[in-house]
Image 1 (cartoon, rainbow, N blue to C red):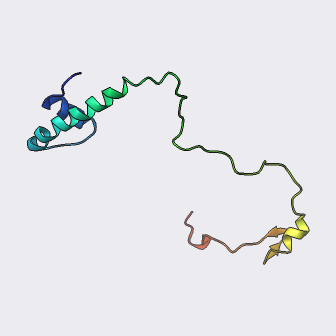
Image 2: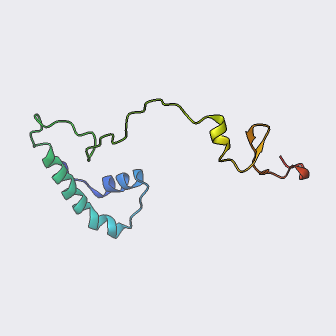
Image 3: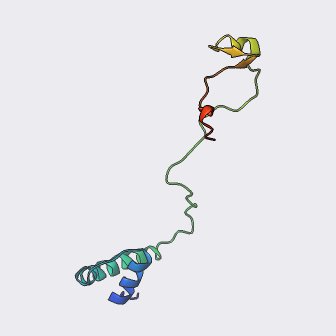
Length: 102
């Protein structure tokens, strides 16, 4: 097990775009070393028979199968349209083209 010194701690902090005062570095080096020791303990656990976990929760598709079916006829659809022009749905203009701004 390796011990983390202040310079290594500062280097790791800079890689993570973190900055600490010298007092914070001195205070946190020991804690960081303890955390790494706990993580190294995980290497001692036998995980040969443990299945690979791809997600923390079990997901399943709760949606129905996507099966094609007939849609609405054009006439049926156009009954719900407030305004129609030449067989198309007519909507108000969104842009004011009179000012020439495109």
